Image (tube, rainbow, N blue to C red; front, side, top):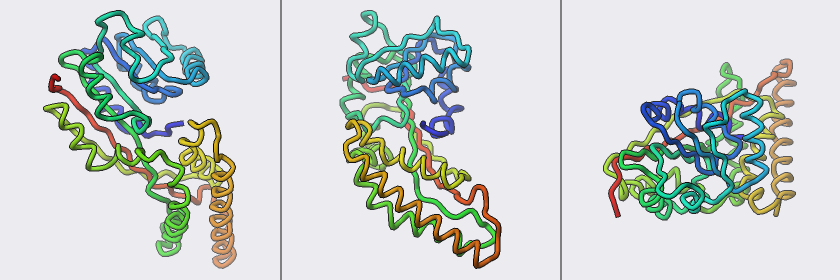
Amino acid sequence: TRRSSDLSFKDIIASNLSGKEHYLDVNAGSGVLFFDCFKNFTGRLVVTDTSTKILERAKAHFQYMGMNTSRVDILECGPYDIDQKMAQGYKFDLITVGQSFHWINPEKFCEYAIRKLLRDRGVLAICGYFVDGFSFNFPEDPMFSQTGQSIFDAFSPKLERYFSPTRRLVDSSQINNVFRKYCWDYERHDVGQKIELTINSFLTFMQFYYSYNVLQKKFENIEEIKAEIDRLGKAVKATLESYYQKKKLPEKEQPILIKIHFFCHVLSDFKRF
């Protein structure tokens, strides 16, 4: 689940679909990004991922949503093999990569996309999100609310080590300079969002968020992450229970306010190599 990360930039993506006929979503996963964009697009869509299971889920989602698949190609391949799966010389007006670019070498992919995938006036959009923490959802008591962030800050270093080492690069100022090497027109968009969650929804999301690198390695160390998330859950529940008792309050259905920031890099007018 990519949550609403890529959807926060749907208007940016949609503006780059206008007049375009050939759209590629790389490492598409189950399709949150391209599903939302598809209704704004009348041309041909190519979807790729390395996972057979994930692509089957995307295909099932197409059918469930009653979407026209006659103009969709679903390809199982890596990010550098796409041109070999397409007709010779086939290129795209728009390429998107959502919440998976940290699995890709930025310089290698930019050069590959420019040489093999993008049309002359093509656009490359790279989207993603990061969790910045959470607060307890009690705006009337800001001091207590902030203790949620303190809990997150205590657990975050233990969980961050399960991230891919390059995962933070795609959100850094360093990547801005990398992208500028390859295009004359570069834009970066950042949006913050707070989402109310139940405790169980919060813990489920956090496990997925921090487990992503582990899942790619076929569940290596998955029990360690589950144990850390379990400890996080116990700390959250104990803090809330104590607060409810002290203030004589009923339990709140959505006591968690998770803080996420979304980013979108848009590259166009590419330099030729």
